[in-house]
Length: 146
Image 1: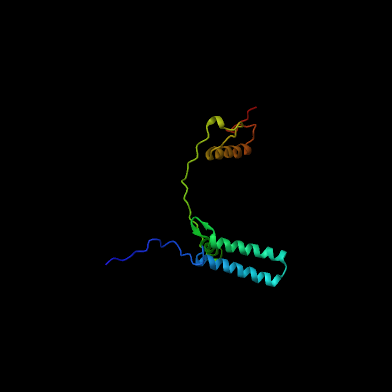
Image 2: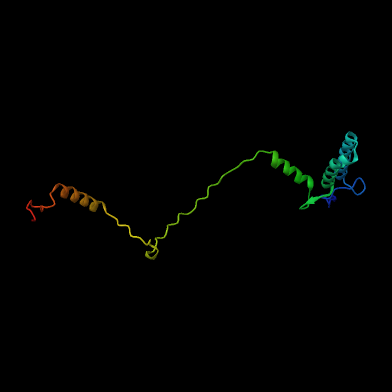
């Protein structure tokens, strides 16, 4: 016993002339919304401001495809994005530590700054303290130079 397997399952059936049932419902909904706007406002110029976007949206829902997907999928994804919960995750990226290169002597500054080590500084302060207390006319043995 053989069974017949459907061949074209991704193609929708054309029910209302060249339109599928989804396309017909989208166009019918756009026409109904346009009729409701027209009955409330009653001015054709002001109606056009509201009716044209409604009909453009209905036509896009019925016929426009992005990447071979219906426009309704894009609208649904937009609603989920704007009104859904969002989870923001921060991932820290560790950067490698790069050693700084020493400055060559040719790039040294033009002025000279003398540096004193800790021991030289102590010796200098000690010698200044001692020599201030001693009379400069006398040498270190207490004898006069004159």
